[in-house]
Image (cartoon, rainbow, N blue to C red; front, side, top):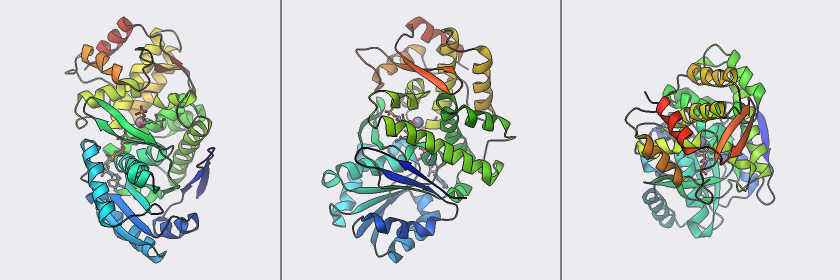
Length: 365
Ligand SMILES: NC(=O)c1ccc[n+]([C@@H]2O[C@H](COP(=O)([O-])OP(=O)(O)OC[C@H]3O[C@@H](n4cnc5c(N)ncnc54)[C@H](O)[C@@H]3O)[C@@H](O)[C@H]2O)c1
Ligand SMILES: O=C(O)C(=O)C[C@@H](O)[C@H](O)[C@H](O)COP(=O)(O)O
Ligand SMILES: [Zn+2]
């Protein structure tokens, strides 16, 4: 069961290859793409411990000169300081314009590596080898790269596309269940914004809380349909001038929760899960969709074991204020992605502030 999905772009098209037990083939898959001779693998100690040796061996067998750079795990390391350390290692190994960075890790490693690749020598190649569910279905695809600012999520970054996204679903067997659930938040997102059929297939599954809950077939459906949804959207609007903003469903309030909790207590997927419940509640109050639809969304989020409430200690005013840092703000107005039915959303800046405060208060626990 392997799939190849094309991300078709005006200048920088590439493929997403999804194939179980394929990690050892990375080097030979990269070879025809003309990615220079030197490769710097960026990862974190835990992931490199599991998969570093197989990746390095595969690259060396394909003729690359390989070095590695490890960053401690966690969202709190998605900073400009980590980028500066990658530059130091790139300099030490004399990376050239034709050289390649390989991101071996979750979304944090992918976003950091992509931004380092976008900026080192004004742009070198990079390849995504996502190891978390969230990075496989979302972060590795589409070329949003960057780092956080203490006051706002992903405020520093660049659009910069990888040359290849190489997914071996089997690496998910070592992913902690909490991180698996975080990835399910972005999968559910695609169901709500784009692919109703994916949503109903998820509803039919008995359990969705860990890798071991999924038959290989359902996992393949989740990966291919999610990557296809992202590829479809990004192919139509690479730099978020319109449609691509729908991929931000659940992220407006989600990002505020992440930054207000110091990028450590609540992870990205968990924050997006809460953000989708909040966006669904706003849509319900604005009569954009119906109670049964909102309940189906929330039931699916609960089935994965994700949080559905806003932490009680977060101040409602602080959340509303933090929304001003969102990249979707236009002329001072916060834009929301709101569902109109399962599989469809609209983008609006018409959410009244009092309604917003009311929804946030109601979701506190
Ligand atoms: N660029 C984009 O389009 C995009 C899209 C979605 C999310 N993101 C970003 O991605 C980040 C979240 O990504 P994430 O959820 O992967 O978090 P993450 O990168 O922090 O990874 C989560 C944890 O899982 C561990 N891990 C990953 N793969 C593993 C494996 N196979 N085995 C064992 N442990 C493993 C990591 O070491 C880490 O501790 C956020 O910074 C978010 O902003 C970016
Ligand atoms: O690819 C996109 O576009 C997304 O919005 C995907 C999101 O899941 C992702 O978290 C993204 O990094 C958020 O983008 P931002 O522009 O709001 O920082
Ligand atoms: Zn996201």
